[in-house]
Image (tube, rainbow, N blue to C red; front, side, top):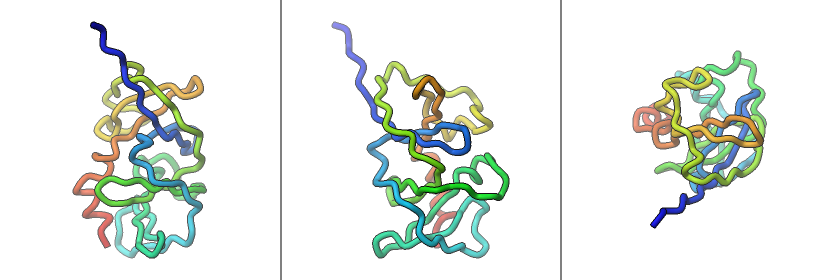
Length: 150
C-alpha cells in the first residue's frame, strides 16, 4: 500500500524581494501596524511592543533579525503568530496561501539567503519562486522569548 502525501498550508509573505512562509496553523491574523512603542535597551531585532486587543504584543523585525536591509524600515503589515504565546512579525506584503504536499517540501541547505538553516524548516515553490519556510518554534525559542520579554 502506497502512502499518499498529506498537504500542508503555508502563509506566504514577502520581505524585500524574498519570499517566506509559516504554517497557516501558526498564524492568527494579519494586521496593519498601529503605533509600535520602542523598548529601550532591547535587542536590535525587537521593533517594540504594540497594543493588540488590550494586550501587549512583542513585535520582531525579520529584516533586522536576518540582516536583510539597512535600518530604513519598509514593513507595512504585522503577521500575528502563535507559538506558546502571541508574537508579531513585521512583513512587507502578504503573497497568499500555498498548499503543498509533504513530498514537495525540500530540505534546507546549511544557509539559504544568508539565513542559518536552524531557522528554516524547508523550502517550497510559490508562483515559480522559492519560499523559505520558517521554523516558528526555533525563531521563538526560549532564548528569543527571554529577549522579547518586557
